[in-house]
Amino acid sequence: MSNNPHLPALDGLSVFLAVSRGGGFRTAARWLGIAPSTVSETISRLEASLGVPLLIRTTRNVALTEAGRALAERLEPVMSEARSALADAASSSGSVRGALKLNVPGAVMSDILPPLIDRFLKRHPDVRLEIIVDDRLTDTLAAGFDAGIRYGEHLAQDMIAVPIGPRRQWAALAASPDYLKMHPAPEHPRDVLDHACIRTRFASGALAEWEFERGEEVVRVDPAASIAIGTSAWQAAIDLAIAGHGLVFAFGNWLEPHFASGALVPLLSDWWPEFDGPFLYYSSRLTPRPLRAFIDLVAEDRRARGTDEKPNPA
Image (cartoon, rainbow, N blue to C red; front, side):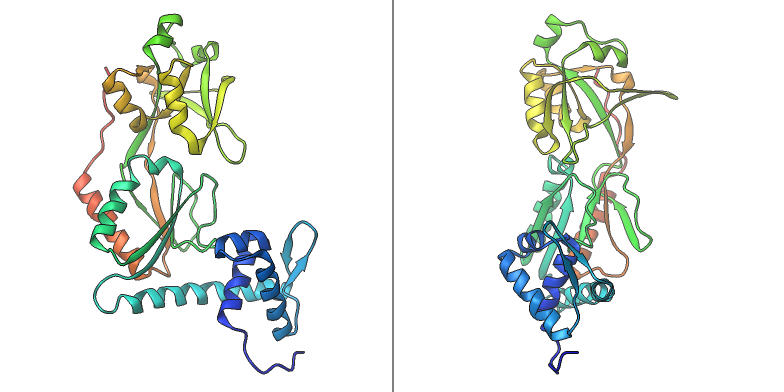
């Protein structure tokens, strides 16, 4: 056992939690904005002060020891509560202060989240905001975020989810007038298999699904991708469709301006599938003042928005 009577510094514990969440020194270093060597040295000092190993180091990654796992499980709620307490203390003067860190998919960065963020920052200019765009199903709390935005993700027991933006959304199929001059418009979802298709790919490597619905009938198709583009570059997929390179299947709200301008033509509109809009989700145990202020703004937006109707493209 260590003879050091002093408790480890809190910054060392924060570094340890970042390694635990990220599964390695490099990921933790990237999150914290420090060098990987600093992370390694900090963990070594922490282990020396406690007198027990917290991590098992291999050439490729690190894993928690039993003592490390137990420490991380007990520290997580404590450190989250500390962040919340600090944010509340900073806001005690009446104005909302502190940091708000969100993990969101690229789908909400087109027209759903930016106007909310604009209003939020105008109302609370002293809040430091960080938004990480990620289409993976990241455990937002474990990665140190205050809240996340997701579509239909299964929530842990202690999580709360509230709708943000449109209550219902839909996917739409489209092509440019020039493309349709050279190729007959599809009359059934399976007809897209005979077309050039521009598809988006998640960071996991999976292609975004093309699923169509009409009444009780559901048709899933997996056309060959004449062009595949990462989901973070979805705008490029739409631009290529406008340029006449093939069909694109995307969020209807992304395509509506191009329908209105005539740059794209809606296809198979009676087969467009509807789905729930995105949800803001956060821990029921910890809601620091900046997050509570953002939740209040989202609630205001929901009341003002009312119901969301699927447009008629005809």
